[in-house]
Image 1 (cartoon, rainbow, N blue to C red):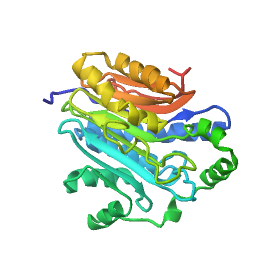
Image 2: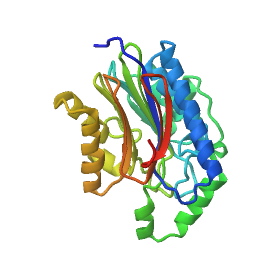
Image 3: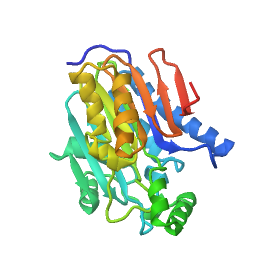
Image 4: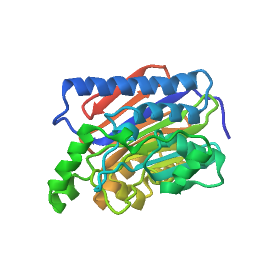
Length: 310
């Protein structure tokens, strides 16, 4: 049951961010884009728009930014291709849409939304998802659109590393996501990613999996980032919302239990952003950094990338 609420908004640009190699110029640019995307999402909420619209619009900005591992900045798989995944969920209706392993869709989050709103399905993958994209009038791009030199060099480096070393660095790549509470009290969450550098065999992580990388209901909304296998195995996003809904846990405790407890115990790492029905906002991660930006109940915008920032 929705109710009047003060809008709040948060986005992330992926856990696994490290200080090493991050130039002041890149740092400043990333923060500027995150601020722009957060304020775009919040602006929609402030003008009475839906949480779903706010999440979608912010993620489109992040997908179009080559710095982030989604859309234009997606990493390359083992075969030198970009494989994109995304999902979106409406907490008010429990409707959801997801796409995985698409290669020509400029903004996968918009295709995930189309799956939710224009089909009877929740998830579509690969060529079929792209056929559906064409059928609903979405623009497809040449796969070359997704090429960025930095991501290409990351693949070359990964291909040279031995299997064990790569296993240990596999999670150091990002994802983007957003979560919103609108003025009607409705929550929504969305996530988009290019996955892991050098991934093979059609591997899909948690980002397009409803309940793992994305979940929203009437009590809570979550977007996750990190080593996807562990978020799938722990059904992390749903678990956080279940703790809030069934156990009446505070949002901070629920995210702490999952992100700082369950996921690391399994051997994974990463983080989440989350909002509850009361407008409490949490960003929690067990990695060195996770880019995130949020607009609080007062309308103030905040941007942080590492643990020592407030």
